[in-house]
Length: 175
Image 1 (cartoon, rainbow, N blue to C red):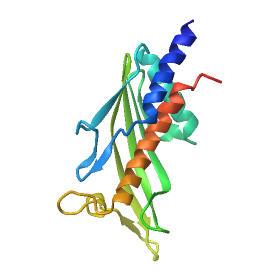
Image 2: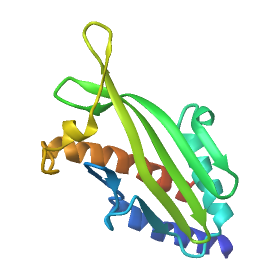
Image 3: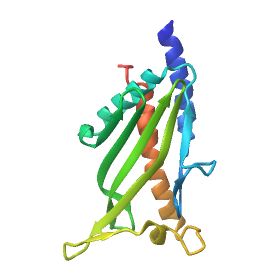
Image 4: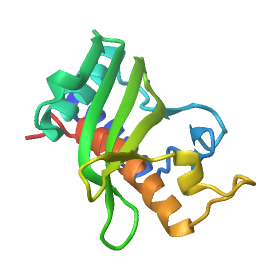
């Protein structure tokens, strides 16, 4: 009976995840719908330790060597620092490599996700690295996006990372 209740709760969370846009990139960094530097995902009836364990298992199954980039506060918080080669597309053929950090905090029935942070760089033709100035690359002087397609891509990229971790965490023990 307990498994049916937990499965039902996770299916409810999964339904909410399908429509989630956790963060949007602004000139100051990622912000939630409420214009905060974090968002909270409600998971009613699930204990803090179970949420923590499932997200940690999810990260371990999705990333090839996550232990190098994990900082853990057992049962309370997970911070993942990761690197993706050719992660952010800038034009038809150019991609930036991206370093990013995702942080998750846990309470009974809740997962707090802090705004992702990232830096990106691209290798020049002469072998040197050119670091992306995020504010100048994505935004005009008035703060509006320079290119809506690129802005949507970076939002989809980071929201997709978060979504994949949370979705995987809902069915991690369902094998």
